[in-house]
Length: 143
Image 1 (cartoon, rainbow, N blue to C red):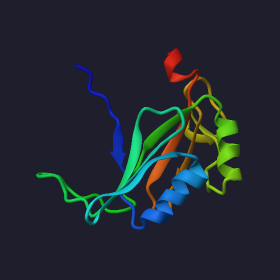
Image 2: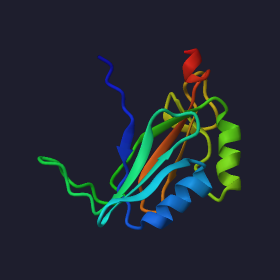
Image 3: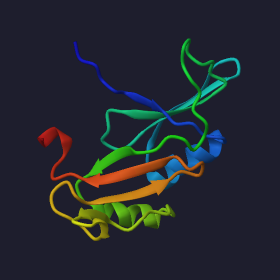
Image 4: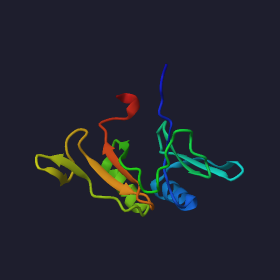
């Protein structure tokens, strides 16, 4: 049996602001923006080329035994691209405050690209949820 990660909830304070950020600035496709039952709104978006989506939820009751994440507490979600410099240029052109490209060196983080799998940049959404973008040597389907 396959266990596929398909949706990650992202806690936000303002659904429309988050939708605008992820769709218009980061470039995620909007799969769903609907009130699925009275008072329950779901916005689901998918990064280009990804099989995993993110979802912003409003009015959704917590699952039994679950815990609520406060907006801005989700950190370290990671996206992969095959050209980190082009991806950075795209984000900057769309108005995203994104870090310089960095790599891990002998004394920790340093500016500039590193070797294979060692080039990263970061950004935050308007609530402070943080993302890491890593350069991969090839598309996922080719690895």
